[in-house]
Image (cartoon, rainbow, N blue to C red; front, side, top):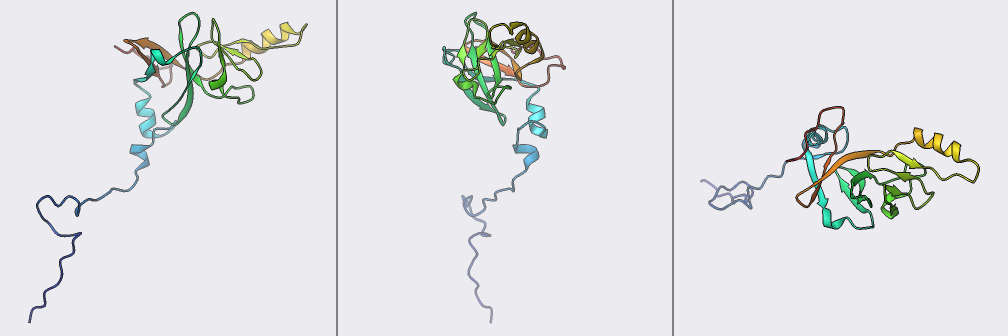
Length: 169
């Protein structure tokens, strides 16, 4: 005699049976990870991305985590928008607590001042050593990304600027 076997609910085909047929694919890092050096990350870095609204940029820098990188966005006193790596190159202090200046941002820990493009503008030095501080500032650069504001949003180009990067429309 034929024996009746119970139907396995996972393999049963039925109308509206999506719950029973739901297959979750394995993690594929080449498609889902967007950090520096990953295939998807390198692809996405070739486009301008909206990272925040202009109204969010006050006199306090805004901390952001985008594509696996910790960044700070700010608008300096002259109205220019900057997007820098969140940790100061001098001692790794967070620029999230930095002070927005007329031109650029100053690290609140040791007072290094950076422009919106990452150029070091000032290095604090004891009295009489200002010349050495100027020489040191010329050799320092905080990692930064090109940023513009359009239609109330801040856009950042996180790819290599050696490629030509058209402005966002």
